[in-house]
Image (cartoon, rainbow, N blue to C red; front, side):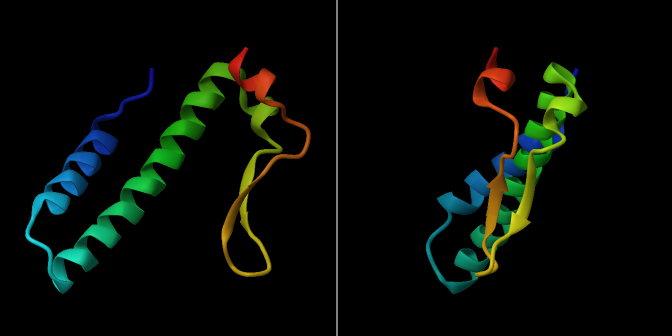
Length: 85
């Protein structure tokens, strides 16, 4: 069973920041909260998939930076049907 409490709290925190009047400091706060929430979402999704299909099936699934420094998902031999079947 995957516990979502930390992710749910991060998502609520992001939503609260988005409801605030817009200014430079709120913008910075929203960016930081988004980054934190995104990282938690990635980790929770990975944990869920490992629990569902096993770590062997997810071994080829990684995040790595491309030449421009942007984060990409890299799929080598894993297929969508393996994950969602």
